[in-house]
Image 1 (cartoon, rainbow, N blue to C red):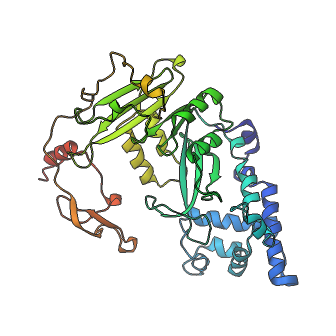
Image 2 (image 1 turned 60 degrees about the horizontal axis):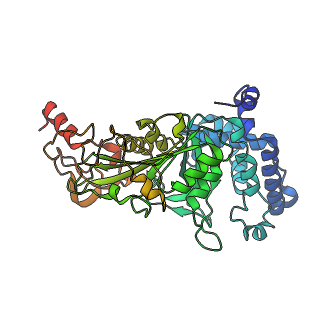
Length: 435
């Protein structure tokens, strides 16, 4: 929900844009760009003013609206195949000049500042812009802290390579966003390792920093990179915030009884409790029937507000990341909603407390889950031994995959297929008369 200040200042599209791109932000860009233009062209540089800057930024936004991010500017301004609004708004030569001269700091003093700050090239602009985000929106009770990779393949000392992300290369940012609207409430840029080496307790530091100023009684959802029992205790004691998330099974403070899987059924759950925390271990089915996956989740909350309750709503919040590709977000939400729970970790003396006797209505480790399906015939093997290009996607995408269709034996990728549980897939094929 927007704040009173934002609601009063947003009268139309232009005024709403000015709430984020303030006159101070424009002044920083204009000063640095004109300094660079004078350095390169001398007296021939006529200077960029506020109207030129808004026009240039508007064309960039319009190119995104038209989904032309990868299209050349010459193509957008072409008299035959381009769009008239681009060539009538700004000459192509001027657009190229602004693109090459756009700066956000003083280039001459940058080397000295970069010694202590890798983000020196845009630090002043970033701080001026990011500090306004919390003042324009009041987040709802559920927020998500996660990482976001902004695609970028240029020269940058802290560019990250993340093979699990669609873009793989880019600049990583930590984001605290509203789970309902995906509004980025706070952001931090990850600039890589410090001069002293990798930072310890990085996940806890990020969560604690991004949730600063968040009202009490909010629920923070994060993944197993961030979650720790110490962090959850600090959030609850110092700020009145509850923490939900998954926890890695190799944490030494976890009760050993929750890690045992030999005597448990698939989809069964085991619970452990402390006065302020709840931990559940779900034995989820794996890709190979003989190798089930263990999903450990913990929820830390104020038990004075009522008895602990598990539902799918908290587990789905992590998928609501601003700017994330829709398919990735939907897959994450589907994956987490199948095994809803809450998470954290416990150290030292808390291990004994977590092994206490659970309530009578809690499932025992040997009890089957409430939604465990009846045994079904195994689904047909859809994994090919050789990796090939997807036959359903355009060749320019170059999507390599091991998956083949169990009916037509064509190679398909995740973008042109849909995943089913084996029991559901068999039922669908029989009803559809396809086998």
